[in-house]
Amino acid sequence: MYFNSNIKILRLRRKITQDMVAGGLGISRSTINSYENGSVQNPTLEALVSFSKFFKMSLDTLVKIDLSRVSEFQLSELERGHDVFVTGAKLRVLATTVDSNNKENIEVVPIKAKAGYKSGYADPDFIKKLPTFQLPILFGERKYRMFQISGDSMMPIPDKSWVIGEYVENFYDIKDGQAYVFLTEDDGVVFKVANNNIKKKKSLTLQSLNPLYDAYDVPVNEIREVWKFCNYLSSEIPDKYWERDKILKKIEKVEAEMIAIKKAL
Image 1 (cartoon, rainbow, N blue to C red):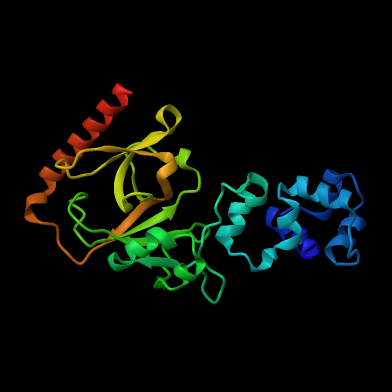
Image 2: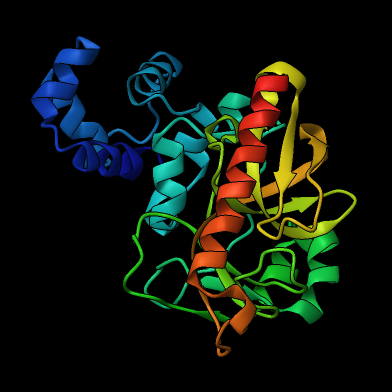
């Protein structure tokens, strides 16, 4: 049972004193100290429930999970209320990997692995086999993954570029006009600009930067993962056709189409 060490970890992360916890729970500071140092090995159910409510974390997590071995990203998700035991089975715990310092890796999904990713995205064994790297310019407390895209639908971003995305837990956070990597039930991994219609139509409208491609709707229940576009890597110089002025015109056209879509809803 990890209750004793977990409540100390959570208290220190909140930067609060034992006196503050004691005041919040209506017990003495010495009792809090006894819990944290392990003098009390078998806290009562009433005490467990009180700490669970105070830290907004489920009993299962507070007792069964060693928070000292959880990555920073996963611990931050728990603290934000994304606790699978609290919110229900519909919330999937993201399969992820960490380095020797328990820091989140950036897993790499090349084109040849995209088919396998469609079925193995939630399988820790599959994720562990993906190449990984670290990029210090990104925020350490967030989760990132890199996908290799194919085709010209997102030109001027070249074919076979590598797109780095930040994991999106809540689909309602998807912003209109922003680019995301989506894992969908039918199409697998796709890189598109989104229009969020979840509240009205329970779907997302996905739009390519290349105006030759039509926008289309995807029901939200067919979306398995969402990664917000951060940046991309490419060894190719964009084709001359996509010079600056033409790129701006294409983007303006896409924006106009997105506005038209919103007005039609």
